[in-house]
Length: 182
Image 1 (cartoon, rainbow, N blue to C red):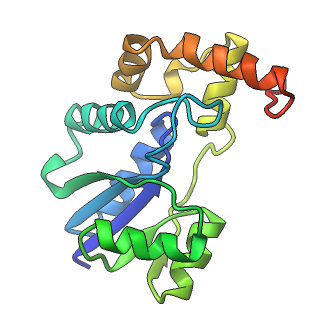
Image 2: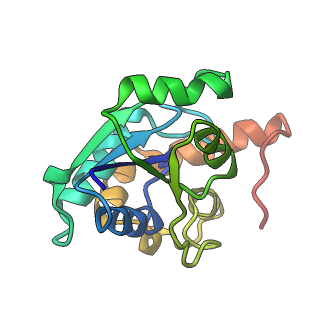
Image 3: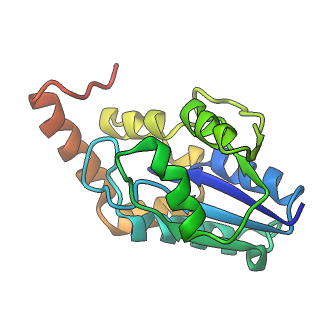
């Protein structure tokens, strides 16, 4: 298989994402990483900008001796709001691909309807290796750094991401639309 696609929000990039990238690279010659919801930032669910997320991904992959960065493209793609058109937008903004690596049910349905081959990577330690869990740990002041790459930690620290996430959570909690269990 020549090219594959891995779509995520990477809010933030975590070790589960890195595992999926390594898994995908065993099957394809080139992997396009789509940074989804590229138009979203400074929200409780999407605290980081597309540029910050690209920096997390690029810096992490550059520093991983097992990954050949020359085989990877990173492309930001904004949300459309119309699911059926979203896959077409992905096809317009990325190089041609033969498979999508995803465990997201909606992504899988949409690409399956278009006849694209889906490969569902094994998710190890899913409860821990989740961006939602990482943001939750940041809000609660719990250990989160071991769930992400050192480069992701650095980007989060450099952009004052801990304060940002806590502030966004507080704002959202005030409007009662976002909760983090304790």
